[in-house]
Length: 633
Image (tube, rainbow, N blue to C red; front, side, top):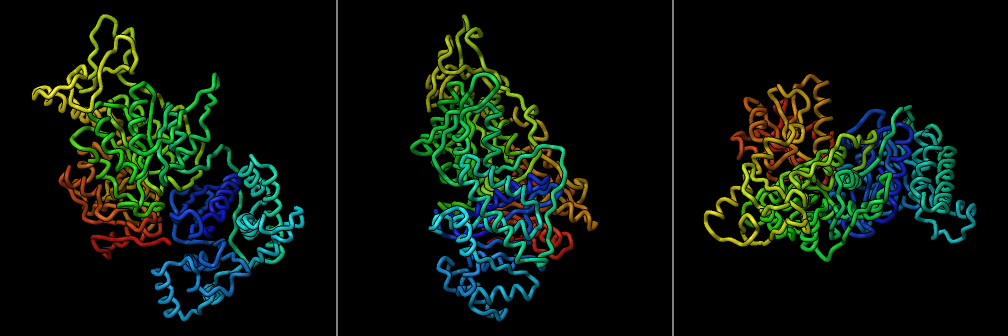
């Protein structure tokens, strides 16, 4: 784990570390936690490394690289026995309760901790407490090392290179782990590939810190990272990046957005890679930063009607502003894609923290009744493929599709084998051409058995039709006649029956573990990885338990869910919200209610450790019907 003040290079350090491990054939899972202020308050990045694939974080920290005193204080109890803490030598006399960025609620907890454990008031006292638990503390004279690096680089003002403390921690960390420094160098150079001079400076800092640790911390640390041989290419990417890449695969050519955390990272990644090298002529994605979210959703609808595969990307407060535009798209049967990243709510809530409390909002947002599809991804690989699939769904069924994600997924990083682009094929549905319309009167909203009317893009010759916010007839003219109104409402709504019938089963539900067991977990979204790892651990201990991941959360595949849950002794709903929203929806639509809930709404994502402990407590009759998880700083 690397931690420090927001803006101090924590993310850069963690990404370099993760890349270097990936280059050595290791699997990586990373979780980024950051404060909502722009600069100064605490942020951290927790990386888990393994020679086998991993799906989530755990509670334990083997090595903590603390850029400041606050990081050491906040995470000291997460460091395991025989683990280590890297800390600057100048921090030792810092009085814990005088750290200006600690909130009063946390200071009150620290006072109780100091009294209960008889720990003194300085950081040095806290680190001595850690040493009593067999935690190694590595004091690093950062300013002295920077001075020496400055001499090597011909830089006299140390203030110009203090930002490189983050790279010093990487050098010390890899030296302690006895990891191949050549791979660390490669990661540094790749990170700063567009700035060769900066790359050289950081490589110098990396090696200087590596040498210092080798010389001064001999045999103090037993943890090791060893590279392993692999015969496949791999990616190390974030959820935001996977969504952006999936949109490119899906044929997205217009993306609109107004900046909002954590959605904006996706649009900015698309902006940085707008020109697409396709083997022939270059293509491009138009990325538009609009004046607000109202403009964003309506611009995307306009682009979709004009024939582009178009999407808008937002988070909770932004989606609130999009509700009227969503209704317009529903009424006009627009193949609109909305990528929705949930975060801590309500109101501004926890702008940079995780949440899964917007499921019912996504289902019911907008006035009136109109169909929409909601597809929820549970890991980065699903983020990639689902971001392409939602365009097929939107165009095939001619309705808004909401790709529902969350902050935990957006800001986690993971190692994957290169994705198989051949698995996806663009399907545009009933899209007519000029030739198809020759000699015919075009009816954009023609009544059909399925509810899906053949469509044309705006500007197609012979395809004259109208779009209005009002109810309309088959051509698109405004109509308030009762019979027409009934038929139009039923036309739109019966498309959901077609969705339930035609969407492939694997895009509706996925099963893991022993699904014939009398114990079953139901969940959706980012808790997936922690649940799967918990099931594997419980299986090794002799417990029988299955997991059903709901991917198509609307329309819910009611019969399939009901068939799976009927007769189960324990149905355990696992969600990152207060009320167990998916569990409630399942009860409403199947009549079967979960009898246990494992919930978390602190803004921090679930870890394998706490999910495993909660599930085991339930299976051994040592838990209440409602378990609320609390881990995370």
